[in-house]
Amino acid sequence: MCQMRVVVEKEGREEVMLENVTQLEVIASGIVVATLFEGAREYAGAVLRRIDFLAGKVFLELG
Image 1 (cartoon, rainbow, N blue to C red):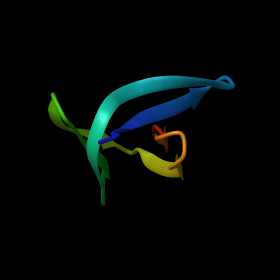
Image 2 (cartoon, rainbow, N blue to C red):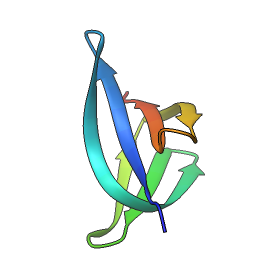
Image 3 (cartoon, one colour):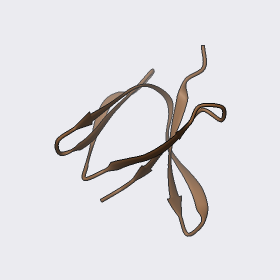
Image 4 (cartoon, rainbow, N blue to C red):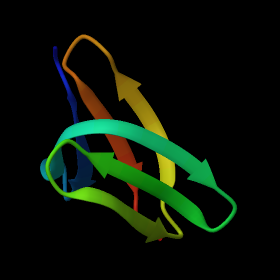
């Protein structure tokens, strides 16, 4: 099984926020991300920018 990574782009570089992501939910206040080992975290104001399925990356913009 291949889990995704949540990534934020800062100054042209990719910064990995979370690895082994198993679930992502868009909610009214932002995004909730659950990982295999750490459980769920809410990122208020976060916006889903794109998903690269081939690379296994979800790109967020933090608000």
